[in-house]
Length: 184
Image (cartoon, rainbow, N blue to C red; front, side):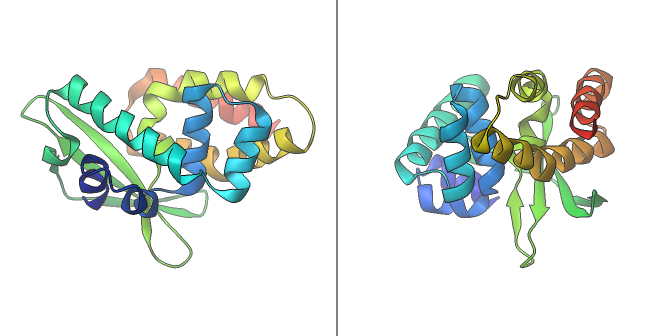
């Protein structure tokens, strides 16, 4: 997977091309407790390259520390496509051995390209944080831009993760809580 190679080689431009911009902005907001204005700017203008470079470096180091190997050494399985909320996703199984497996989700863009959807991919570990972030959004244009990102990015990502079934019942309960709040 090109994204794995880009992350391991600190190729920020290639990593940026491989990942959905809005999903990166949402994840950065959660991980760094960004204020609404900064998050909205990232959603509108894209995440600045120096911020992305620092994020991908940290991501590569964190993964390597956790898995005791670089992310590019993971085994990539055969993807399976699914359509949710009008968006085409692919669930790509990855593994680092016989007993360690996970999934990366990609989303097809309007131009036909496939990009890693970080929200769907990391949703199991971030679902509670995403719910908390949504529940504590303020008011104003920046908060409204974030709400739109939740509708356009988080909702389909959560549906894709639930449809795939890799994350289990606990994730599904949290995801349905957020989806219920967004729909109300």
